[in-house]
Image (cartoon, rainbow, N blue to C red; front, side, top):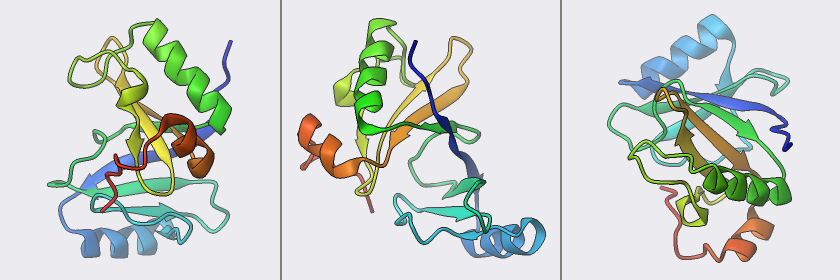
Length: 145
């Protein structure tokens, strides 16, 4: 059985990024995570230790559904998960079966999004970007913004 590793982050939708950044920092003590580049109108927030992370995304930006839970794995495990999800005929939010061409390139990490049979959104990501991009030949499919 494959292992998911740990939860990396949870997606949260906001309609005012500046207001959200102020609130999350003041109330929850979460600040921008400098290790993750901003992509698709999203900003990654983290606590001081990096053990809790939220991906704030503007309502209008294309991204994972709000509440999506993102699991992190290594590069080889990411490939194995892609094959596992495809073999189980797991669907994405559009109802398409997840496959290797379902991978999204965020310029510093890769992800694959899917839903469970009840429509709950999930994502598996890997920060082994260079190795995976070469294996999957993704150079021309970046969605980073």
